[in-house]
Image 1 (cartoon, one colour):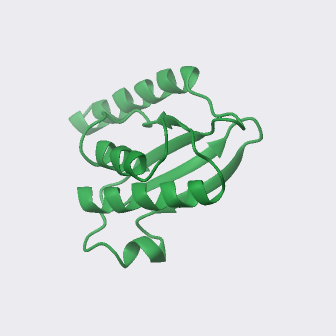
Image 2 (cartoon, helix red, strand yellow):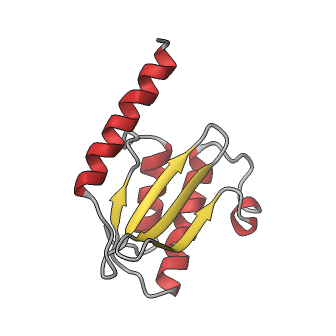
Length: 122
């Protein structure tokens, strides 16, 4: 088993452990973050109904115009700001943060802090 496979297995275990505790409701939906090497994605999900209320990523047109490259911290900040603005537009002020098993560092941290700066409460 390679180091990459071990890292992926560890992340999946963390993600499962977090999802046992973190669940989104209609009053406080879940802000779910996922990433690849090139892009970062964020969704606000109501787990009671299984519906995605708001989503944003580095592939969205409004975010794509603000960033130079899609896989860095500046792109994560732009996605965090965009998801917060869309959420506040739909009267979603409080969310629970689901980091998806990723360590709270780098792009994940930048996205979360940008969303907080725009007014989203975790």
